[in-house]
Length: 523
Image (cartoon, rainbow, N blue to C red; front, side, top):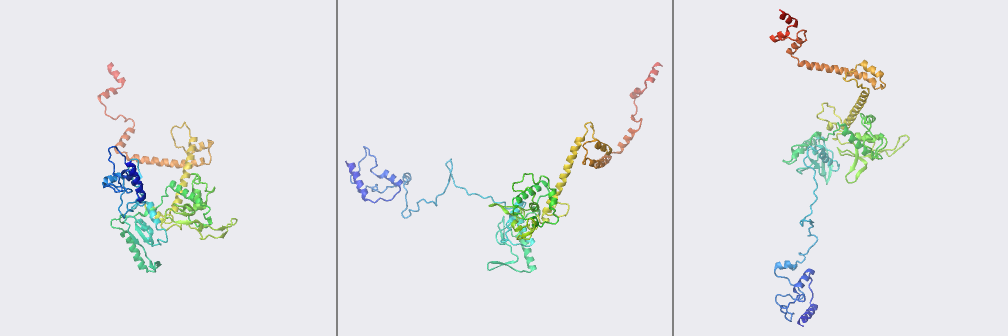
């Protein structure tokens, strides 16, 4: 009866009291510990007083959660304690949540930032890095042409890159320098200024010193820069030179609709395109198999541009640019549509609407330091001759030499095959055939033809080489001859002097004729 009365009084007090906002977890836990309705009763438990309207000491009033005084109990119970007036500080927001990666072992790891691989900062012998530094100077809005002694190639060889309007920065020590010779800022704009030649020369001389001295004292670019021959192209090997030429040709053939006409080109006078085409190997246009974009007949315009170092432009973000070409050495970009005539009468070949540009000079369009244009850059310091040639001239000479070697080896292969057919198995000792014997064999051979007629000349050349070889052998042999050896040979060569040793008693006995021996016995 008393228990029912206490429950009824608790319900009445709960209806009149305003509940305080609290979290569900704290409410459930506080009710489980402080509410007398959920408290289990045991036979030995003492009954609570009848009047529960006045809470006893240590008991929280109804509707208010009780929090343990012991901090360890608070942690175990899970009651969230907030500071009055700073309730928002204890809240959990998205901004202060740290995302961590869960691992099966139970440990959490924070996400790592993607580290970008930086290019090497000091690399005086790396050609690709030198070209990359040169590429930062190609924008005319950032870098204007300078005198030869302080041009972009001189700055790039010492580790400088362009970092703004007429501003360079070292890739290693990060020192910056403004390079201005004949310009001045007026109202925030750069205006060209006319300076005297002596002042300009003094400025150029000062900037030549700053190319090295502007680095920090411990900077490696201050001690050594790139070699002058680093931009030289390796075109002396026919295999690699022809492979790169074929690659450039295929890329330009993929843009054949944008290529200018052959009469739009102005090629060098010493470049015979038809002669170069005839000197290429027979399998140049077919091995490896060409892509579907290549025409059935060789494209002369694409071949001329490929010979002078141009290839298709490819943007790393967009991909292949169909109407442009580029040079991978000087990074010059060429708009092909600027040099192609807009309308041409196909019947007569007359130009109806000309191109925006008069003509295309593929060699002159390269930058001044490019080896395709500059013979000094392509010059080999180890060469014996001082005949400087540009890269396209070296490539044309390599093609010509390769054609001669291919023709010679092809003829040698045919002749060796013919000799194997005409070889007689009975002849075990190889003998150099004479002209008369070879002529008789050729007359009697059914396989004699125009190639066999040249064997007479080869035989005479072979005889001359044999005589020269024997003469050399005699000279070498004469070096090993001594005076004693000559005397011994002369003695051995005389008749009756083969046994020139003095005779002994045994030899005398053995040397008596048998007839004399028999006569002595009879006596």
